[in-house]
Structures are given as structure tokens and as C-alpha cells.
Picture: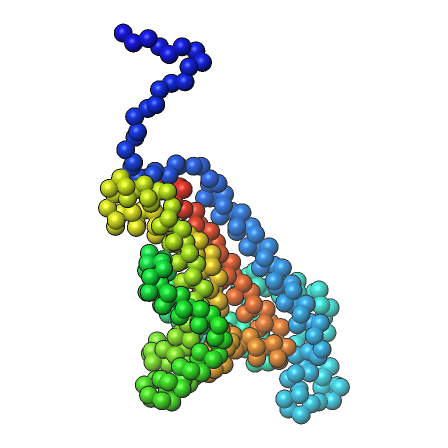
Length: 348
């Protein structure tokens, strides 16, 4: 019968434990419902603040919608200007006009465009659909391309393939978006004649019925957004590859495909989710440079035209819509970051 070690005596060395896959501990974070509730409360505040700031910007700028409309027809007399201001409701105090717009907006009525005399919902309907199509197609190309290139490059850190990808994304980061679009037009439209140089659509025409019109705008947008996302995914992949969990899993004989899916991919995806959400909201919101370069009728160009015409209802509607898209995508990004965080896993 062996004697117990005396007090104050250091215990003998234990037998080494064979290395095995490091299992992240399950930790309790904030409940997902509470996170969503907080984000929704913040989203309402953000949308409200944006609407106030946009309304003040349109109201405090020189001139108004009545002056802008009459200037297109050579101007008008003071009586005509006063009558048009009364018709548009511009002679009502500014605070009353905003509160009236806010109350109508909460009921789904976004008002009537000052410049076009049509309901704002009908004015932005086609433009919003065009921007949605362009943004969704661009996002469908951007997300897997960024994740795939970043993972592929990060797992080959320091090799020739990694250096080639890193050099390519560095070039894309350095070149402005309009330069990329111009080069694409010169190459594929003017030079080779494969694609149309202009992506203009007639009234009621859907871009889905003419997919060739989307190719150059999509390539321009993806090229300008791809580089930063690839760099983030690559850096996260390199860190994950060198992490203790991955090394322990490989020493423990865990298959490489499981190491990749269980530890490397989540560690590479989570950091890029918030950045990707911002880029996707940028794509869905309509991009002025691409729309201007290719003549694509989206929300970006509509917002510029409405701002120039001091069309406050239209400017407010587009701005609030784009803000809601951005806030919603950021909320989705927060939820995905929580769900995909490797620290929440149980090791299965």
C-alpha cells in the first residue's frame, strides 16, 4: 500500500496526456432575443435621427422645390411662386411639415413627389427594384468569391499563390471604382464588343430580362468591394491556421476536412461578417458611380436628382429606405456573428 505524499511535498509528475482536438468551452452570452431587441430599439432611433437630419438638410439649403420647378420653365412671378408653395404645402412651418410627413410615413404614406407630382412609392418602385437586382446579383458574386479567395490564399500563406492573390487585391484597393468601370468598358464593350457599354433600361423594363446589361456594372461593383473582404478573410484564416486549437486537432489525428470546417472556416468567416454587411448594404442601396457610368436607373441616381430638385418627400423616402436596408443587414450580421462564433460551439 503506497504512502500518501507528505504535506509540503510536491506531487510527482503525471503521465503526459495524448494531444487531442481542443474543444472550445461553451460560454453563455447574451440571449439572442435580447440582442435582437436592443438592436431593433437602436435601429428605430437611427432611422428617426436620419429622417430628421435629412429633412433639415433639404429645408435649410438655399431655395426650395417651388423655385426649382419654376426655374425649369424659365422662372415665374412672385405670385406664381407663392401659389406653388401653397400648393406644395411649403408655406406650412417646418416642424409641422416634418411631423405630418412622419405621421403619414408611419401609416405607409410617403407623400407625393414635389417634382413629378406622383406618389413617392410609385416613383421609387421601379428604381428600388433595379437597385435590388443589381445589389443581389453583385452580393451573390461577392460573398463566395471573397470567402473562397481569402480561405484559399490564407491556407497557402507565403506561397506563390498567396502572393499573387495579395498583389491582385492590393491593385484593386488602389484603383478607383470609376477607373475599373472605364477599363471594363474599353475592354469588353469597345474593344471586344461582347457586352453593351450602357445599361440603360426603358420604363417598365426589368434588368432580369436583359442579363447582359448587368455584367459590367456587377463586375465594377464586385471588383471595388472584393479586395478588402479577401484581405480580412485571409488574415483571419492565417490566424486560425496557427492557433492552438487547429494544431492540437491535427496532432490528435482529426481529419483535415473536419479541421477546416470546424475551426478554420468559422474563425475566418466571423470577422468578415460585419464588413460584408456594410458592403452588401452599399450594393443594395444603389451605387452612384456605377449607375452614372453605365446609365443604370437605380436609387443612387434617383437620390441625386431628387436632391438637386429639392424634392424633400422623395429624398426622405430614399434616404430612410437605404437606412432601413443598412440597419437590417447590420442586425443580420450581428446575429450571424453570435451564431457562428466558434466559442459558442460544444466541440461536436
